[in-house]
Every structure is written in structure tokens, then in C-alpha cells.
Length: 211
Image 1: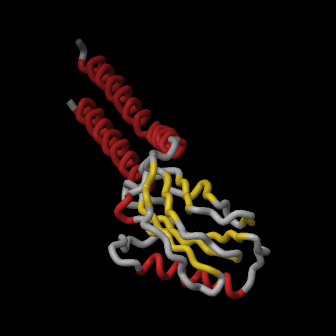
Image 2: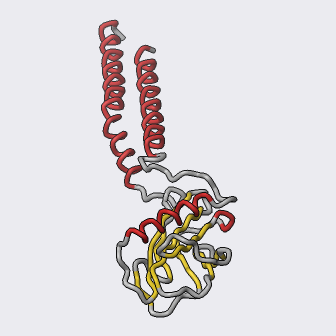
Image 3: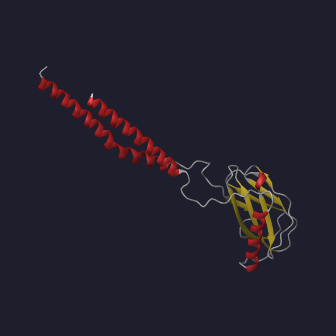
């Protein structure tokens, strides 16, 4: 084959390889965007979901005619019975004598209480999910009494919440402050893998072009 023709063939091959490498490099943004979008659209895993109170007996901010014999709280996720605290206080902030909490069917907490006289009561709870995530809060209910936002009730709520958090034997894990969690790390890892694979492909195309 004449030298000129051979150079022409090699030139065409080099151009083809170069264009192939450029095509791979040019497709990187589209691939990265597609992968990131797919990852972000994935539903949150159960581990990433936070536990929450879904119902209670007596109900939150309700007025009942007959005093309850027990307080029941139902959550969305399983609970760790070793780190469960339920405190019931009256309108003056005094704790009502209760028995220890019982974790029933993994998502429910039942705490028997002594007969309650008429009045407004605050239930403060602090529970820990099976995955170690702590959840705490409080709500009020009334027994044959108007449920008003009196200062005494607010004081009782604060005192009950503090007592629940300070009770011995409870987990001291703080509530997460929110945020993106592990998503940035996952997306960043996916992007790094794609970019690394693309760079390797471009270098391989260049080596083939040189040889």
C-alpha cells in the first residue's frame, strides 16, 4: 500500500477513535444527570424513615367523660422497650402515679394509670425506635374539664417532658436536626464512579488511537 494511502487509513482510524472518545466524554453529563435523578426519585428506605406517633388513647387534645385506666400510644415503627418513658402530669405539674410502660405488638406502648380525678392532664413520651432513633413529644387530654391553654398546663407539659428525658436508664441520643442525611454521599459516590469509568474509557480510546 502506498505511504500516502496508509497514512490516510491511519488518519481515518485516528479520527474515528478520537470522535468515539469525544462521544463518550460528551455523554458523561447526560449519564450523570440520569443516574442522579434516578437515585433522588428512589423512595426512602425504612431505615431512613423517622418514627412518629400516629394515634393515642385518650386522643390528643380531647375531652373524655370517663377517666382512662391506661394510656396507649401507637407509633409508625417498632420500638425498643428498654428505652421507653411515659410520664403523666396533672395541671399543676405533679406526676400521676403510673405503672411501667408495656410495649405491645412492637409499635404500641401501654401504661396503666390510677383513677384520675377530673382535670387536664399532660402525657409526655420519649421512645426509641428499633433502629436507635429517639422520638419525644407531649399532648394533653381532659377528664370532665374544659381543655384550655392555661399556663398551668403549659408548665405541666414542660415539667413532664423534662422528667421523661431525665429518667434514669433512658437513651441519651439527641434528636437529629434533619438535613439531607446520606443522600449527598450516595449521589457523590455514583457520580465519582461514572466519572472514573468515563476517564478510563477516554484514555483507553487515546491509547488505541496512538497504537
